[in-house]
Amino acid sequence: MKDHNHWLAVCRQLITEHHSKARKAWEGMNQRQRGVILHSAGLSARFCPYDWKDFNNRELRQLKRGIQRLRALANAFGSISDLDFVQPVLPVVVAEVSKPEQASLVIQAVLEARNKLKTGAITRNH
Image: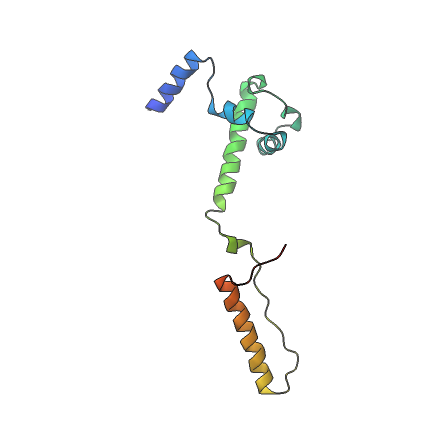
């Protein structure tokens, strides 16, 4: 069953010829962004400079499918945080420790470094 949003879109289309949120989004994109959409839709990069009205119905369906693929791909990541993009600290391998006191100092240093990473005390300089 069609909802009120569908019928509002039909009325807009009758009044303004072809009202389309997708057209408005396409016209607001730069060439690079359009290229991503076209690639996901399996269309050639030669369509980058096209206006929305230059596409035929088959190409518009392909664009829609490409956008759906991109949305599904982005949703696969779910909610991500900054910690998802940090490599874990590799454990320090101690070859030979002659005294037990030295081993405990190394272990203590590793634990302190791990705690600093967890609390966000260490920041990367780029």
